[in-house]
Image (cartoon, rainbow, N blue to C red; front, side):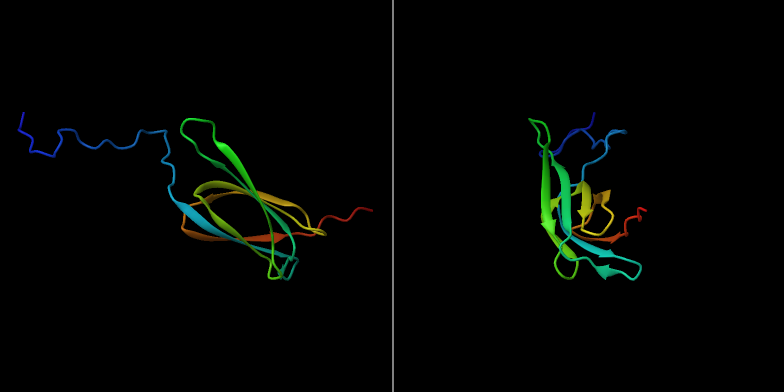
Length: 122
């Protein structure tokens, strides 16, 4: 066995175990752009719901939901949230409800959502 200099260790870094995904660290500034129709028009005053889990070490993950409204340009800005999986739901009068999971990985991210007209009932 070779001698080890002060401040160094004999162990080598181990790669992460297979099957365990590394959790993204940091936060994301999220911008959601909501448009609708065949010719995309901004949807004003749409309710935007952002749901995610805030991970805790000693207790269960805390589920957080934010309720936002789009401005006249169809944009909702979300304050910094943890990176990872996020559920975005959009509800607006006269439009079909929308909901989808997204995976946030960047510092700033823009998500564009296109709403559809609901089917006509006769």
